[in-house]
Length: 350
Image (cartoon, rainbow, N blue to C red; front, top):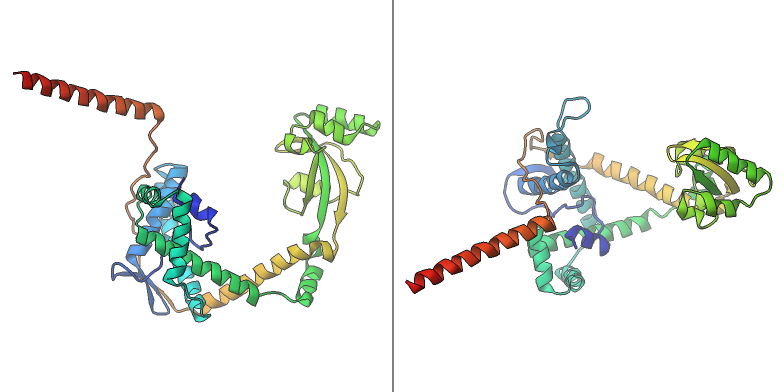
């Protein structure tokens, strides 16, 4: 189990996946936010951790790859993003503190105990931290940061709770975005197969039965082809455009997408405020958050002092040893040990 996986499991909420609290370590600063420093140490540590994750996913040469316009490397883009995220986080952190949100040592200790229990003991957690080049103090700083941001998010959700009037006004302006469809489909490889199925359906064949027998989408096929409820933009473009142009009960001609050919049956389409209310609320809160954050960032006095174009050396992530190689290594070590013991015994006889 990785630390990243564990942090996800305990519901960690953080703007940057590996961001640490600022104000410790080296005195050199990468930036200041309203006079408070973001240290070079934190900037470099955050970048290295993000960079190693990218290298693990895209290869050791990823950081030196050029951007499409050829003007920058991916490493430089990542360093810019790293600093921007740290600046943004410091702005939110300061706002959280102004709102009276405080995280105590007791809160952090409680969170740490949860992680100890999750790993099955202090020793196992210590081993996991060591594998990820983390100390207990660093881990607790992560936890303090995450608890702060979690409480900040909860407080902001309450503050930005929209009124019924706001929801209705937003819905009236964006009605098309909140349509929902309930549809079923049968997916096959070729146009000829799709046309043959459509012919059967036109002749009265049962859609659900054919979906179970012939659809390549086995997940929906087991449910008679049902895709459940979805909104515009959730499906691939060709499918999406077709389904939202149909009438309830209608069965389409073959529709080609990157996955093959679909026969679509529209069960139901709805665009009423009541059915869309939850989605409307989510959209309103998202827009309010965005406007509030933009206002905060505009108000903040930010001074960036580090040159993000300057390279920061990053060690390639450690690759897990393949079982075969590991066995070879162990056999080699055992062989070497046996030779040493034999040599020692020979010398003792002399």
